[in-house]
Image 1 (cartoon, rainbow, N blue to C red):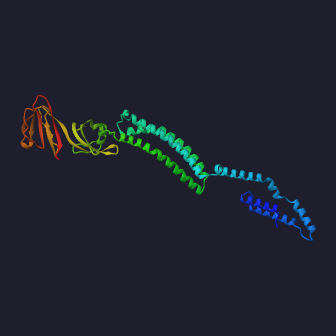
Image 2 (tube, rainbow, N blue to C red; image 1 turned 135 degrees about the horizontal axis):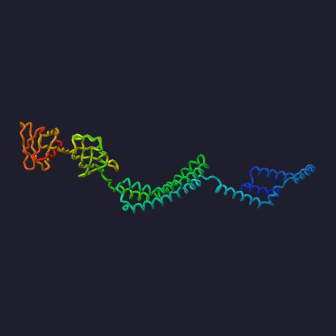
Image 3 (cartoon, rainbow, N blue to C red; image 1 turned 30 degrees about the horizontal axis):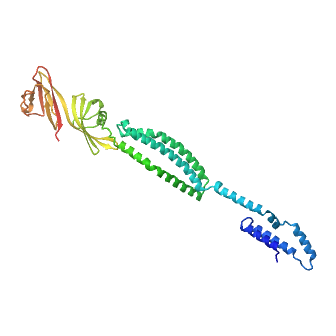
Length: 380
């Protein structure tokens, strides 16, 4: 039978065990010690000497119950101190993948915020000043826009490099499942933040793209036309050298659904046949924002022929062509071999009767040599 003091101590030990202040092993040890002490104090008939010896031993042992009774509040205080230290470690020192990911994401979002502020200002200023730039091509407009964005892009690069370094540092503290959780939370945080900014920026971007798209890129100029002609072969002329083209004038432009037709008047030079006036139709197709050369057709070419005074000059007509003659206000004789060398007076004072041979002869009816111009055209 336990006495009241022993029973009370056992109850207090049990409460400490339930509160986690002592362990099961400590509780069992102290319980055994108390029971041994209680049994030693109980009288055993015929064994007075043994009891006295055991009582002496027990009195010399550490009295935990007495110590606990005297130091109970110190023990409770120590327990709560340890609990506070654990809570502090768990909250502030322990590696938490969620907190680490949010810390890295906050740095990234700060970069995004600053970058969008700069880009929005650049885009707004660009839109306001767009008409003042007087862009002649879409390429020039985009080049200027990219130049204005360079400072924002440079700032973004510097900021994001620091963020990536910090992110790697935080990510290294999280392994296994924690690493998966870290990545998932980081991606969710950053994507959600970008989504809050992207609509405003996309609206500005769309407005700028619309303004740039409205710029009508210029049609090919005469220098490009000359360059595109080199290497082209037509019914009347093969273009080999730029030096053969002494002049080019765009007389008419027709554009429809990405197709461009240019009617161009050319001045051509030949070592063998002299100067020529020619008319070509050049076809271009729109390739993205540029005009790409497709084909060329020569509609006409003229030859200058000189009629001497005292002799006949032979003129050979180009085969498979139509032609007409411009006497340039000069008077000449024409001899037709296919008409028994009949001689016909021609010029502004005479009407043309339509007779022609594949070749004929000309001679001036004036006191000096004169010129006539024959213009050739394709039959089809």
